[in-house]
Image 1 (cartoon, rainbow over the protein chains, first blue to last red):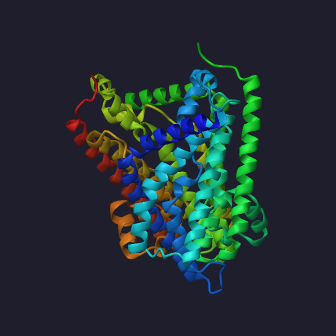
Image 2: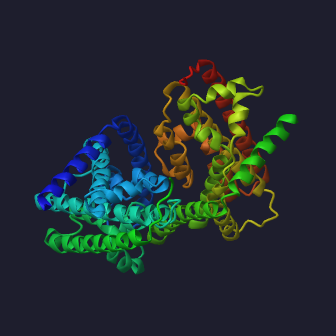
Image 3: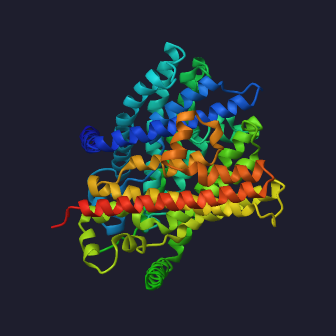
Length: 268
Length: 265
């Protein structure tokens, strides 16, 4: 039985993944945008670093690499809900979803997983290559750091998918599909390190950002890559990520259960 | 004159339709304001960490931030028709515009006014107000006119960029994400003094996308020169450059319209 549904989930993932891989022109266009944006960010940081002599928690060279890694994996941020799920909730098609002989949570989770991986891969690989060759992205600090980076990025994908699925579920409560779905990207953007590397946040904010799950999306993998966080800490960091993933999945499942009891299906 | 009345009536209709969904409007506006608030937090944290930016203080950069964001919010709010224009081309609905007894640019411009952009305009204005209190230039100083002119000139440049983005859709059908580099990217660039960027980049934002003359130069004339004539000159320059850029993009638009091949059935 479990075997059967695993096959189904794998098939859903593979199908969504292939569909999302089709958007190659969009990825190419995005690449130009991301390169331009990265250049702007690098120049701004350069000017700030030249303006102050005092030592910073991250060196300028580290920040440059941080910016490029951020541009490469920008689509890992849970920017958006699954647009098809949103449409299903609006039209009432969600009733069919409830009828499927699959656990709805995991069904939506694997869809989110595809939504986060395929576009990220399309964009990250060429961007990492170009940034390393031409724009000052350094190689990982050590081989161990590279392994840690890859493992933590894998966990980040799960984390991002868990957040996306949770936000998908909130759509069942607010039919017009906004509210939390609109708020989430802003929160994730602010606390993940996209707007500014987290070590550069004011000291009083460090405890907060270190506690929240969002640092696991990009900040933690990047700092391991740079050697800013030592490799020995990777197991602990990974555990922290997994704990948040478990919490978010648990909360999502609970919320979905509640939503199912009070769901009013739209349309006719 | 009649065109103006028609334009205002169209925008009035657009406002009334948005006010039918008041809660959604409030959420959208609030969401936008939060995004801008986050950007403000980003700039503030950078100054908290580094103290100053090549001699520029936080209030001085806040002045640029306020100008760039109010300019952009104005352009986004009234230029929405051009921003979403590619959908008209894709669906073939542009054909209908060609049949009506008004100019096409006029009809696209009159399509929608997006009130939710107040979510960017108001925080931008607040930042500008805070900067004004901090930079020690009294309210009645006439040099502030240069800032007002700069905001209008900047809005004209951003509006022109939206027209350009729409014009490109005549050829590409799809909307081009690349244009985001000069619209959203332009705001990001104009938030900081242009002098911090590399020379080729400065040239690009002076000659190709003339945000330098509309945002940076007026702000600099207010902050660094006490000569009223200097500010006046830069205010006039900002308006002229903005107007010329807008006129140029409208010319390109009419070239695009002539090229247009319908995709509709």
